[in-house]
Length: 155
Image 1 (spheres, rainbow, N blue to C red):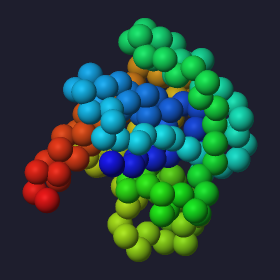
Image 2 (image 1 turned 30 degrees about the vertical axis):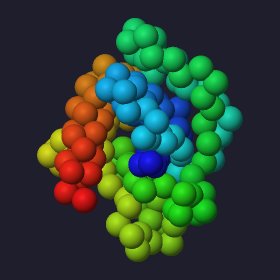
Image 3 (image 1 turned 180 degrees about the vertical axis):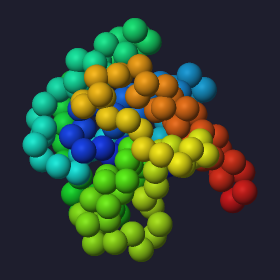
Image 4 (image 1 turned 120 degrees about the horizontal axis):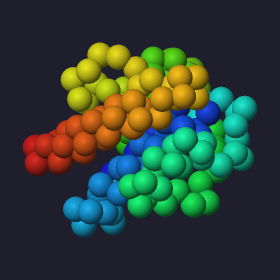
């Protein structure tokens, strides 16, 4: 089983969008039992909050449910529980390294790097542009899934 944790600052916009898009993708290809997919925050300010209405609106339009999702904070103990920690921006990457005390197993990566794009996923909490964020995350998730499938074939 491949265990993936998507990470952003508050776990209400970008990382839950990535979590539920990835869950939908693996379900559509009949591989949902091969993955454990979750999301979390590097900060505690939104812990317990539901998914932001802008993210929920995008997911609802795609008929993807995020019912019951509440923001949770990433913990140091998560490092041994997951194979991949996929951050939405460079601040998330730095904060994950701080929380984990480093990245000795090279588990931390940037979502957009899988799509060959050297920039952060824009944060719709500040921009209000959830469509742009969806476009980024959709590209990133599809490229990440392709990476995982190619990686599995090699080993």
